[in-house]
Image (cartoon, rainbow, N blue to C red; front, side, top):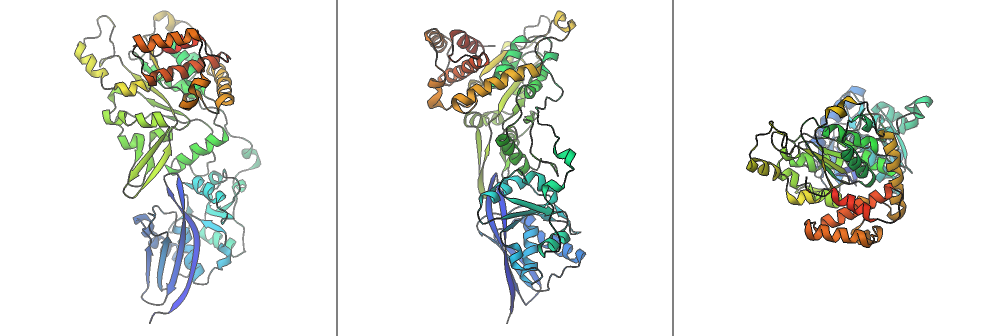
Length: 511
């Protein structure tokens, strides 16, 4: 008859999208046929941890008993993926065998992947796990790989410690050493440095020749978070203008930086040893991207480009070349600011509050209206433009013509406001909007829109004409109101005037 040897329980966690669920790693040892079994809806990467655990233990001379080892990952109906449960399973086995006292793990939540040499490797989702641990009163300490310490330290209210070695972790749990903390990773001179300003990628607005209307549109877009479509011939500067937009945006606030870092952590895009991201994201996927790549998806739901651009800029160059279904999938995240992915194994939600900047040519060859260069048939042009549907265009706040740059403009020296000057105006406008309704103008709740965008009689007359004669939809009306509110904020005006409304309507006119 099998004889019971010991048992142990270790707190851990599993990441589902940006949500973190508690996982209890329960280990039972009984005498019998040597076997390690992991149950509890463990996916292949979790089950493969058996071999990593055995190899790491043998490499370090640890005693993994030749017993029947049963590991239960509770709750049993929650799918567990990835290798982050290697470390808590290993600690549970040693604790059940008496090599580690159970009270050494009380109040400790552990995550980490084991290498065959006993190293503890970085994991995805360290920051969301740290935020979960900080909000859980049962967790007093988070134990994780040293490569994730700086990232996890952004969560306040939780002690964070770790190591790159399983041997060092065991010594610390036995009271023979101390775990490394995030502040031990850097020298004092490095701790006080680091870029907190915007990342302009080397693009400055003043370096773009001509295109005053497009520059004005980008300033408005930056101040209010409005979506922009740039339409013009090749070489007119559409891509350069789009890449200037991140430099017009203020640096991320702490709350925003935590959100952005958490999303990139789940996607595996946070480098080992990195802390919070302070520059706003700029994502520019190729037009061959799939719907799942743009919106998110997969068997294990992962964020797409729209979520990776959260609090930043999503640039779609050559907009009509994207797949029709891919473009139509943009409509919901543009409208709601989030993406919900539902799969048979579970569902996940990702935030997606981004500023969309799209660029396209006026026709397939790109030179419509240029004498002697465009030979596209009228039906060909119509078919090309129909690749971008009316419902998607209706969700874009400003349609901007980007004409070819004349020789006189190319020959003159760079002029106009620099990105830094424009960014100062943008920051003031955003601050006015935040004081008024707590968010940027593009995200004003519909129930508060009329109150926030009070328009005089002249402005309302213009809006009435736009709806009646220009075919402005109800959605277009609301978006024009938001743009007008942003223009007023840039001028420091408390009330939306007729001029502000007129400029907003001009940006929604046919191009």
